[in-house]
Amino acid sequence: MNAHSRPHRDSVFVEEAEVLAHQPYDGRQFIMKLQAPKIARDARPGSFVHVRCDLQRPMRRPLSIMRCDRQKGWIELLYRVFGEGTALLSQHKVGSHINLMGPIGTPFTLHPERPRPLLLGGGVGIPPMIFIADEARKQKGGFRPMVLMGSETPFPFKTRPSQIIIPGLPDGTIAAMPLMEDWGIPSRLASQQAFPGVYQGYITELARTWLNTLDDGQRSEVELFACGPHPMLEAVAEVADEFDLPCQLSLEEFMACAIGGCAGCVVKVHNSDGSSAMKRVCVDGPVFPAEAIFPRTG
Image (cartoon, rainbow, N blue to C red):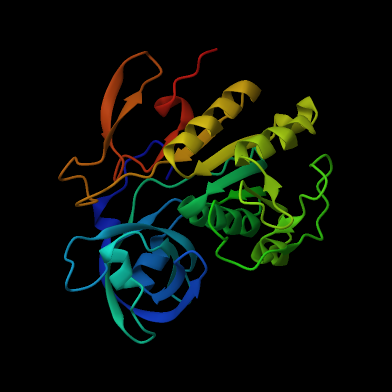
């Protein structure tokens, strides 16, 4: 499935998923591991599930899939408590069951002719970047991903100094995600909160610094992938425009039905012929080419 195809609705399942693990982190963040074999089988980077947080709250919440094991049938979700729904979700214990609908949405697409994917995740936009990094390392296309993550709350993992050298980055920018280190994938972190070893600034500033360390041939192998809040995605699109790089963005929008029926998550999408149309983030996205959301100026 490519980034422009429409997903088949018969690949969306409803499952009563068992909670296998539920780990709290600073900043009211949680990582939940769920046994959901049908969803895990078809999940792809950028896919999300629509979660019924509790019987008291029938309105579902869309949560991006962070990792999955298609053979063992589990998925992982990273979420932050924002309101009553996610607060109720955070109370679930191991062994309880949660109703999920998914996997939903058009996923990211890795292109072998662009073997250096630059992955940028901001806040709750981090999970899809972990998923695509995992997918890239498992494929045989010679992908060499670089992962940059930004957060203004504590990261949902214990950072550690990276053993993977990345030439040209600012001195002291050494904090990395342990999972990426274990996978042999270079990663760095950005924030304005003065976390130790973390780049003090925006994730896009760090991305621009890294891109400037590459020569023309190396940059021609880069494609940007990003998920995060709207201002961050707009800034990522500007970086892609500046360096004339292809870029895929996963949008974050409030959703009601998540299957395209209510049209409550529409955004304006710009076509290459200059026309525009309203598209539903849930089924037409959440992944779109950056220029479709933020038309290039050049």
